[in-house]
Figure 1 (cartoon, rainbow, N blue to C red):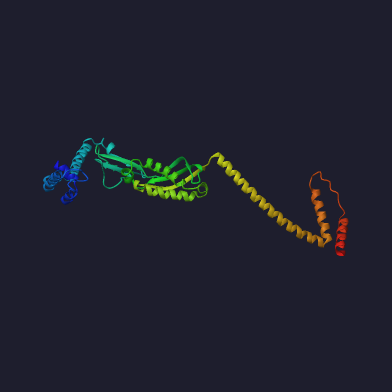
Figure 2: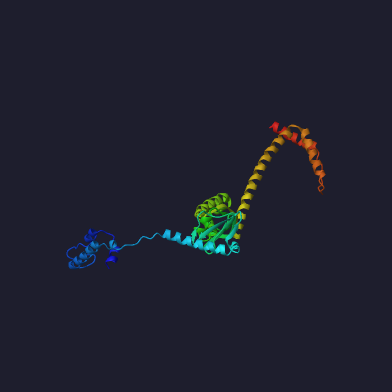
Length: 330
C-alpha cells in the first residue's frame, strides 16, 4: 500500500501537508473531520520517510551483450550446418539480385549492417537470415477515376497517372508496411484534396501547375518511406453530359457573337472603300464604262440561267449629267 501511494504522489512532503490543511475544522474538498485529516497527514509523512524506491535494487542487465553472444552462437551453428550439408546448402545460401534490384537482409530479426545488398551475388545463412528483394525501377500507377466536387460546385471525374520509384530500400522495408499500397492510396487522396480547391476552369486550364503541386506534396510525404515521386500527370477530366451541353451552347453563342462583330467590322470597311471607289468613278466616265464592261464579262462567264440585258452607259451618263446641272442651277 505504501509503494502504490508513493508512485501516485509526485509532489513533495510539504506540498501534501499544505493540501491537507483544514479550514474551520472541516476540509471543504473532502468533507472529513480534523482528526481524520491528522491521521492521514501522519500516514503520508511516514511514506515520505520510508522512500520505498531506495529499498529496491534492480540489477543492470546489458541486453546488447547478451544479444551479441546469442547471435554469435547461432551464426556459428548455422555455418557448421552449411559446411556439413555442402554442396546442397549453396542452393539456399547463395542468392542473386539483378542490376535494378536490392536485397535487405535481416539476421535474427535485426537489420544487417552494411545496408542493402546487390547487385550480384550475396550470401545468407540458413534459419537465421531472411531477406526482402526490392525493385528500383520506376513504377507507373494509373489512378482510378476520382469523382469530386470542385470549388464552384461542379462534379468532375478525373483520371491521373503517377510515376514513382524506391530511392531508399531500407526505409521502404522498415518504415512502412507496403510502400506500393500506401503510395497508391496517398496519390488518390492527394488528387482529391488538390482538385477540390480548384474551379472547373482552373482544372481545365492549369493542369501543369496542378501536376507540379501534387508532385511536391507526394514527394514530401513519401520521403520517409524511401519513395521518390518523379512525375504526376492528369490524363482526362470528365464532366456530366448536361454540363457539356451547357458549355457547348455557351461556347457556340460566344463564337456567333464574335462572328457578328467581325462581319459588322467588315461591312464598315467595305462601305468606306466603296465610297472611295464611287468618288473615283464619278471623276472619270471612261472608268465607269470599263467597270460596266468588266461586270458584264464576269456575269457571262458563269454557267447559269441568268439573262443579261445590256443597258446603254451613255443614257446613264446623260442622267448623271442632268442631275449635276440641276444641282449647279440650284
